[in-house]
Length: 395
Image (tube, rainbow, N blue to C red; front, top):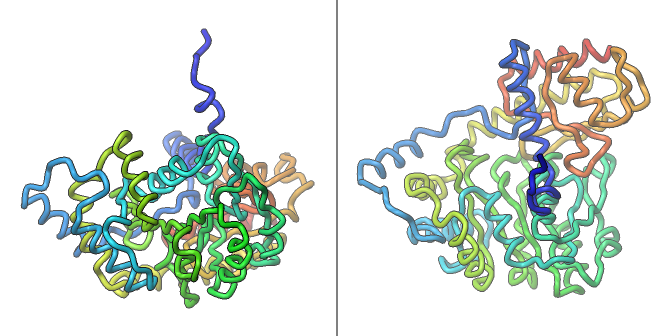
């Protein structure tokens, strides 16, 4: 019997990060000793001061529908955060709180993109960017980069990728999957190109801003002449270990924020009331309160880079932020390992899963077909064991 699903859903790819995580869970349930380095999820608990705020909200009987765009108190707190951390001036009417930064990004794309519009994606890029563009019936155009350029695009590449139909570009710094951070000078050089094309809007995804190792991220909206065309996206999942709380937010021109509220009002309405009350405490907290997590991620980064550096064929850069390494493993293409032909990153990632019981994510999902992504948001013991298995397999 045929299943008459819409063209929209049939055209939508499955998230490769979630698919690999599901495959790893399936194998684990079947009795395999799988170490999953596939999901971008901190392995810390949400800090107690945030949990206490949630408990207080429950005791204060917060249980009703919330405003579609978020509690005023939370939006005011987000404005304080934007000024404190990013030197960005927003007022509460420019803020929309959503059920995670992913919904924030989807809202923005839905209210700005028309069928046939072009969306520029500097690669590597987060897997959902291209799928969200596809849902909007827009075309996504990849702007490639390599490990040799620290996974950064140049102004010349940006200029060459722009078409008369280009409506948006998605920036993500610190970057998932590469950990790359664009400097203020690098962003300003890209902005010089975009100034010549006033029809293009910029989505700046800054979800990993607090997870950096010395290079402070710079907000694209802080560039003169870019503020009115930039939508800044952020959330609490990564820096505050609040992935399951599902709180994301945007700072945007008021007309875009208003449109996102209208869109959200027909899909999910307002974000969970308890999570929002806890989020007020989180965004007002000094980032130093979660520095213990960042310090631990930095230690793991050093260990993972040292261990992977001992494996012939792994080409590495030093990620300045987030909690991923994104090695170029193209040296293994064309080889046969354990009877399996390695023709691409998909083959390599499946080899690691099936023969080393280590789950990673193919770089093809991120627009970087020579790489694989490994998350070091796992325990030191798991990371050491995982890389030991990989090294044994590839030796």
